[in-house]
Image 1 (cartoon, one colour):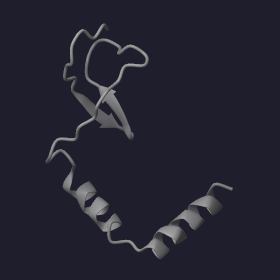
Image 2 (image 1 turned 120 degrees about the vertical axis):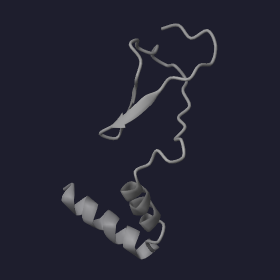
Image 3 (image 1 turned 135 degrees about the horizontal axis):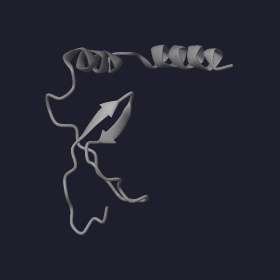
Image 4 (image 1 turned 30 degrees about the horizontal axis):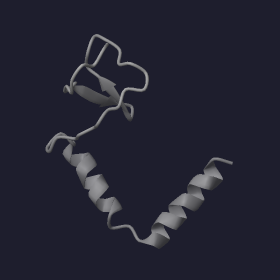
Length: 72
C-alpha cells in the first residue's frame, strides 16, 4: 500500500495489539500516529487505569518485585 498523502485508517485493539481495519498491508517502516478517541475506552478499563494513578511508589515497587519473582 503506497501512502501518497496523510490518511486515517481505522483500527481496533485485540489482545493489546492495534490491528488496522483495512484490506491491505502497510509498508514496513511506515510512520503512524495512534489516537484514542474519547469514550472508546470501556468504563471498567477507565476505572482500572484511574486506580493505577492512586498507587504509591511503594505499591509499584512491590508489584515490580512480585513480577520479577514470577518471571524467574
